[in-house]
Length: 372
Image (cartoon, rainbow, N blue to C red; front, top):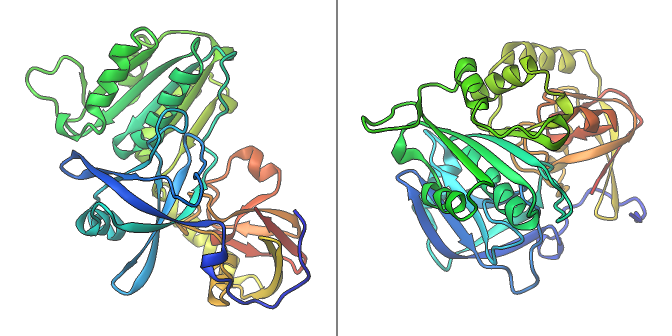
């Protein structure tokens, strides 16, 4: 990327920022009583490209304040003409309740271009087995990955283990049945319900270690070299899956996960670490390179890099602001950055110097971060 000369911090007009787009709602599908799929038309200004497993950041003004939330795309770039995200209501969820209550067909929604690294490349020459673990709304990136894998890799197969509260909570239930029927032998879907009806023939109860061990007996065995494990769902579920995969000696490089909410495990320790970082640090100058521009500003010890930049009117990409979605990810070319939360970055990304500006604090005066 070729960078321009140093410019003072001044907010760029979003109208000229290629990272923002405006999408029109084509259809709203009621998936369950508390989940809807928003179907967006591709913009007339040019097709919005994305990869299965990535997310869209939706931007709306709620109670006079701009709110951003990231939602995984449940459409596949290979077979779906439109862009689709699923929104599930959560208790006291500001955006998750506002969107289904206020949006209607024909409305326009401002979005940040698709982002995210929970992705894989597809090729018709590949022959592999993807084992997907999903819980609740964690199905959204998984169904996109499933559709892409099955249609783009004729010799690959997919096993999906999907946990929900009850039968009425199963999102994309009919669509999953369609894929399993149409691609019999290549798509295996196993449902697990916390509260199962009397006539339920499948598994019921919590997705714990014992149940996971039984489920693995039903999954086709293709060997370690050809099998990859993906998970997305509640923190407790993913911890149980990780424990089982560890017991089975599955290499960590074969396991990938996507988190939607901040974890609660060791949260107190993280808060203590954050406080210690802030109190023991001094203000440092940071250089940010983004969109062909270079910005220099001072970050106070109790402030995050992104927080400071936004206060100065520098329009950097962001979404969750909790260190999970990676919309604010950048590569530290020099200097030291302390992160309050590393959940959103893989071990290899951290080794390569990637940081998250929303939870990042400079620890030296020579921090240079490239975003793009």
